[in-house]
Image (tube, rainbow, N blue to C red; front, side, top):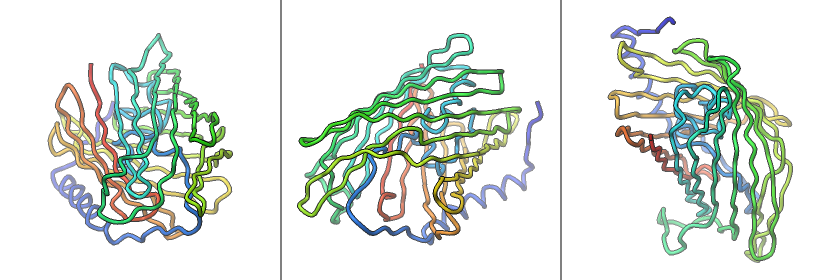
Amino acid sequence: MMNIRPTYYSKILIALSFIFVLFCQPFAIAQTETGDNEGSLRVHKFDTRTLSMGSATLADAYGRTSIGINPALSGLFNNGRDAQFNSYHNWDTNLMQHDFTLPTIIIDRHHFTARAGLTMSGFDEINYRGSARLPEPDVEQYHADLAYAYAVTEVFSVGILQSLSYTFNDETEFLTYFADLGLVYAPAENISYGLSFRGIGRDAHYLINEAGETNLYNQRLGQKLELGSTFRFNTNRRTFLSISLANEKRFGEDGIWYKGGIELLPFPYFAIRSGAIFHIGLSEFIPRLGIGFDTGPFILDYMVAPRDQRGENFHQLGLTFQF
């Protein structure tokens, strides 16, 4: 298996490129939206590391990636004894989501991973940003996910994620279901490819009317096809850099959404991450930033969407336990 071993000067160039990405993000074009106070309750079901890298890691077979980005990834995990907790908070709407992913159960080539979560409003007494927020939706949601991956070979896996949600408030309650499909191919330690198809099923939405009441409804999900790859740059001892790229086609929309993420590991226990999602035709650029600490027994991750734009003004904390 061939390894990619950059020279000393290429390492400096890569590090400088990473710093350039970080400092250019504050000058990105802001995303603006108009209309009613409405939104989807299928908030970010990606792990914290994935979000900080622009949601581009659907092919990262060697990262501890959440089943939400690509259910096929767990089929290439040799060690499924990791449990993961993520806590998401949107500063605009005060919506919070907490989810817990159980360790993967491996039976021969079959890999099963379960996850449970709760979406709810945060604490009204705390103004997190010191400024007015958007109207807060009156809604709660419980969801349960089950991912199944089949390792066709040691380097190729296919998978499906099925999710069932119960959404309610004082006026309305209903169930919704959706499924995601994925595959991953990792022919070498330094490169892997992934494909995912999302949007089979329905999603819960809310609409806050002029009287301040929250109306709940569900609608069909928009279908998306995403293709990506991950490149890992190694030294003799460890990986010091990971780059993930992805293209997402949202059916019914013109153009392509491009995603990119980079993870720099100056030390084995510390990671700096940055990523972005952008659409050239719409002139939209959505940046991400994050860090990670690996203490051995557990990994602590944090990410933030630094732009003050509707729907993209949030942060998330992740904790992975290694048994």
